[in-house]
Length: 410
Length: 151
Ligand SMILES: Cc1cc2nc3c(=O)[nH]c(=O)nc-3n(C[C@H](O)[C@H](O)[C@@H](O)COP(=O)(O)OP(=O)(O)OC[C@H]3O[C@@H](n4cnc5c(N)ncnc54)[C@H](O)[C@@H]3O)c2cc1C
Ligand SMILES: Cc1cc2nc3c(=O)[nH]c(=O)nc-3n(C[C@H](O)[C@H](O)[C@H](O)COP(=O)(O)O)c2cc1C
Image 1: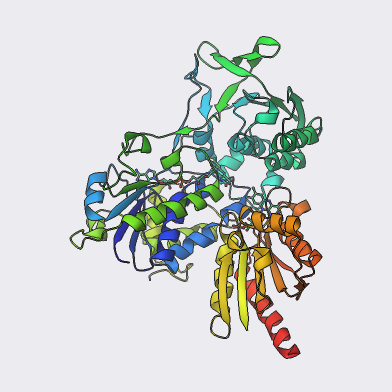
Image 2 (image 1 turned 180 degrees about the horizontal axis):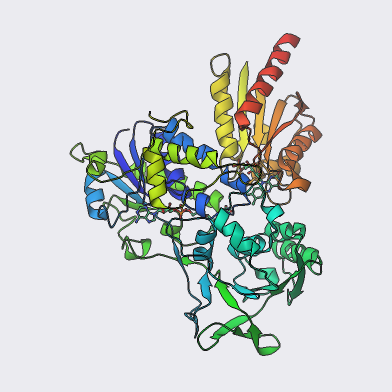
């Protein structure tokens, strides 16, 4: 089958859609577009820097470009550099896989006070994302609101000693920031009882290896069914462990009511099984989900994507909300790819990749390989790569004739 | 030789390795490749040599795509004395206690139904630098060479 498909967002959702499309229709012309000069989205900037095994999935994605013939168009921001309408004119089908980059807010009084940070935003800062805010001062007693895997990732990272971060790709700035934090306590708070929390029990068990914590639990609740029992068992396994300097407190069944403080966070007022309480905190990090930044204006909710005849599709978190991990992205990509192929009608008048020709500083796959080669030059016993952070540094590396990459210059 | 490469996966790494194994053996053998999700253990063909690639999740469990196969294997207990297989495991040493247990459990369940395991189970560690295909291709070639020598 012939035809031209553009995918907006080269994160796991976009990559899996490309992989699936090319598996079934190897002759398709596929463009994976990202606003960053680098591909792989949350694999690079979300999946924790100390979970390199999970990041190794990029070995699969590199084949989409190296063997399956997809092309990468990095540093192209759809909605700014090119409009979505222009893209839809140039391609037979467009798949929106732009993710959800905005942190959902708590939606309670005071949730915009200084000292309230979104987990997504904080993680971008920790992972050297080019558009990240500077790392904030969290103070001695940060409180994390949320009971999903992102909250646990953050707790684990904030608690780790420098030695425990060996082999990760945490950047120099974040490493220095972590070492200088001097946390006395970290509270993790959730609305539901522990038995109904969203995190994977495995993520909880992993906390047992941390050297600097002492962990306690409040109101984990009773299990109903096997899955809940696994969660309760995992929680019971970490309750009371450790004798490190950081007191980690899991508080379940606490509904946030308002953020306390006049000009900066001082605590969180919650409804608990024992009545209303204020939990003191030097800062609050919200890990309660993600939302669209509205940039593309065409999310699943406005109805265009997925409509017969619209030639517009959506995938991943952008398409179905911030639920599901990488395996779900893989499975749903297969369904979306089948739908795209079922409806694809190639029209030779569509110009395809010529649409990128006059844009400045577009980074192709070879450019990304040069960026990666430059990052890998910075590897040592402590770090498996030294990420370039600024767009300028990335563009410079992408343009250089670096000898580090075997593919450079191809 | 007729070879069936079967994989159990969640994020696709095992599927990619299965593809690599198929490509590497294609010239010399008659190779098919499938997700374990599409395979009924009772339907395994004694004419095929089975090469299984399987990752690990959760509590050292088999990955989602291998679960229906594993469940049927345990519930229906088909007799598999005609089935020969070699198995390769994917795992991550970050999960030290359950490293590559998915492939181990799958091998045990097959052997418990009298299937014959050929060669030793080899594993790849996602946290290590080595590429899975660099370990798995020499491994499977050696196993097939031994099999052919034995004929
Ligand atoms: C902090 C965090 C940690 C996680 N850790 C894990 C984990 O360990 N294991 C796991 O299984 N799952 C994990 N997940 C979940 C996983 O990331 C999702 O399941 C993933 O599949 C979502 O991918 P996506 O492709 O939809 O979005 P993204 O990965 O966000 O990809 C979207 C891409 O689109 C680009 N983009 C956005 N807007 C535009 C635009 N206008 N023009 C061009 N490009 C654009 C972005 O730069 C980005 O590269 C984690 C999620 C988060 C937030
Ligand atoms: C949530 C999660 C749990 C995992 N659990 C284990 C485990 O218990 N033991 C292990 O050896 N590997 C474990 N792994 C590592 C995977 O098996 C490894 O990354 C593998 O390459 C994945 O292959 P796949 O893409 O085919 O599923 C886990 C990975 C994730 C993301």
